[in-house]
Length: 167
Image 1 (cartoon, one colour):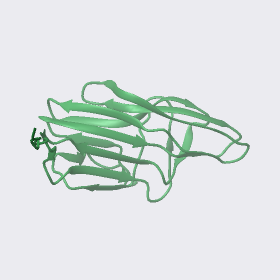
Image 2 (tube, rainbow, N blue to C red):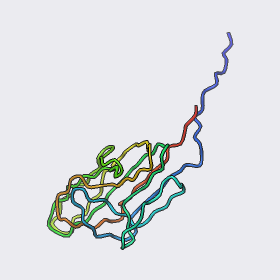
Image 3 (cartoon, one colour):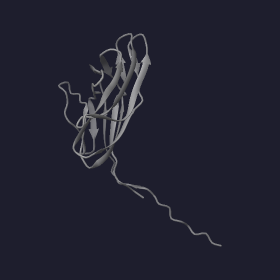
């Protein structure tokens, strides 16, 4: 009896991977109540399909513009600081500005302190297929604590264009 060697399919990913990264380089003081966007002040992208739709007068931005006909993975983390004796309990989620709807899974922060509360976060995550040029923001959908927070290092997002995989 002989044993034949079976060929195994090897997954192949189309390269290069297309992505955009955003992060906070210097702390940003902004409102963060229900409906307010998360702000970043740095962006790196290797894709013309993933861009920002402009900046504020302070040089920050919150909106990501995605080209149609592609599938994207959006991941966002928020790190906050509140200057009061407060409890931070915030939730945030990707928001499709073009279609006026929240998408994907919520992320959140929770921390309690007596002075300058700091928090890390669990990520907000969404997989989306853009059928038209679409603008997304990471927005607060619950915020406990002061109205103005400081977005800190650790506030980041990543958008990946999920290219075709072949087996």
